[in-house]
Structure formats: structure tokens, C-alpha cells
Length: 60
Image (cartoon, rainbow, N blue to C red; front, side, top):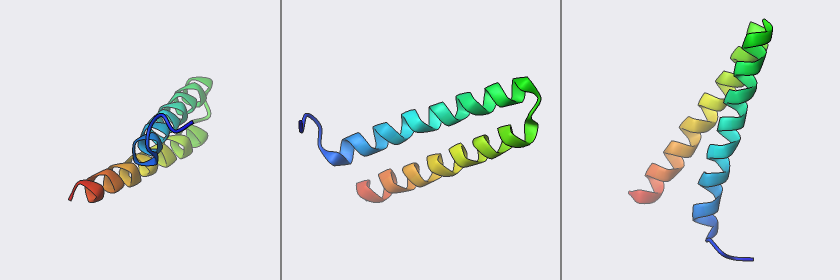
């Protein structure tokens, strides 16, 4: 099923994965596991930066 091209699907998939990571970070933070929450938040921020870089490099 090629409804959308790969160039559009991949960033959308990463955005939803990042939102899931941030949700996990919030749940761990509420449970008191701040170290684990920081790891999830760090990974989410890293993936956001990589996704933004890829989108910007495709536009230029």
C-alpha cells in the first residue's frame, strides 16, 4: 500500500514515536524514577533533532 511516499511517512512515524517516548518519560517521572524519565526525554529530544535536521536538509 503506497498511499503516501516514504519521504512523508518516515517523519510522521518518528513524530509519533517521539510523542510515545515523551509519554513514557512523564509516566516514569510521576512514579519517581527520574533517571529513567531523563533517559526517555533525552532520547526523544535526540530523535526530534535528527528528524528536524533530515526535514530541513531535504528542503534545501
